[in-house]
Length: 171
Image 1 (cartoon, rainbow, N blue to C red):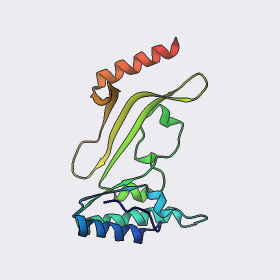
Image 2: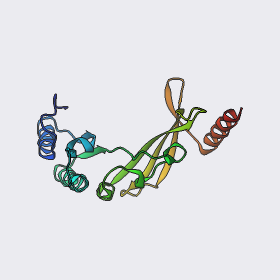
Image 3: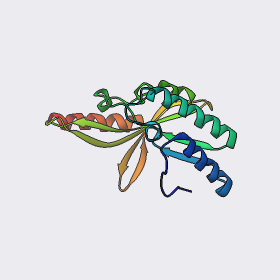
Image 4: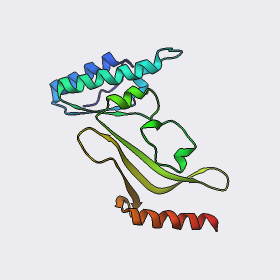
């Protein structure tokens, strides 16, 4: 179930649509892309507080309706993000979003800077389990795009690819 149009950009409207989806279609998973769209407003001095309170409301709603809410939040833009797997600290916005989350997965496309300083993506993609209250081990997984699909790679394969890319950069 996807509403055809987002009539209002506020949490009350989102809650109504989630309730509608669970009642009409027995929906069990809800994707919200992106938290900032339902909390943003121009010149809002309460913006950072709204991010946290919205995340808390969504968590309570998920518990009440027994649904999983996948909340998409962007990362802060940083120079370190080019060479380093992002962490919870790189999530844009309020720290309350990370605090109330049961699970945090961070998706990252590895990149390097070319001679002109522009970003080039290596084709390596990481899924980082940054937080999991269900007991899963915090870990990073590498996926590389090969022959039209993503394949999970081992640390040894990652190191080999990384070293190969570094050598090619030097040539």
